[in-house]
Image (cartoon, rainbow, N blue to C red; front, side, top):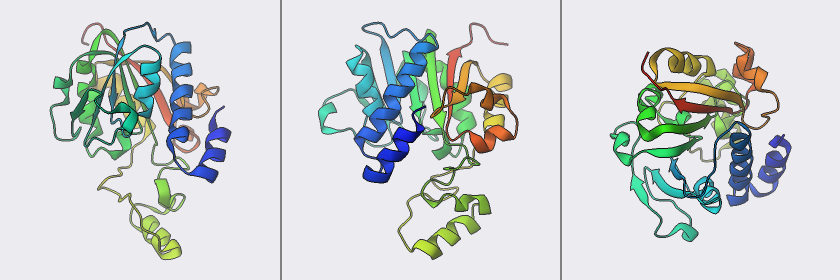
Length: 237
């Protein structure tokens, strides 16, 4: 379980590069255990890359990594790496290419149209490609991000209480750059309206308890961050 390490790191250093490296290496471990082949030269897309920490870890495994995000925030070590600007809500992201592995980590909750991405995400994959999707669902303990746990009071009252109590600047604004998402709705959409099959699902920070994601209602509260391994469906339903 990586959650204690992440909490310790966050308490002392906030969300620095090492914080995200720990997330990436643990996710790679889980993907490897679920059967994702990290063969030398495989192609990967770090979609919503941020500073590119996840993609850099994949490069160290021998991947040929392409990075994409709304703006280029890549760390200096990745200067010159293939990068494409893309807005997943507005742009035709399917033109980015096809990859053996697509990483979309902590992005879905920031999309105003997550269904659009879920419906078209398979077009980024090679026939045997995988998509790793993880995001913070709204009812999880960190669903409101920096104004958690006040998000349990709702998208209007919660942030207002946080602002009043802390008087600190707040980056995340409900329905501007943070949108409530629910695990049950995402799984239902994938099952009925997507060309992606769910290979595995687990709470990202405690993957030892995958059964939690299978428990309706309960999963919305106890899954801190939902991790899904998806694969392109062989033939349309």
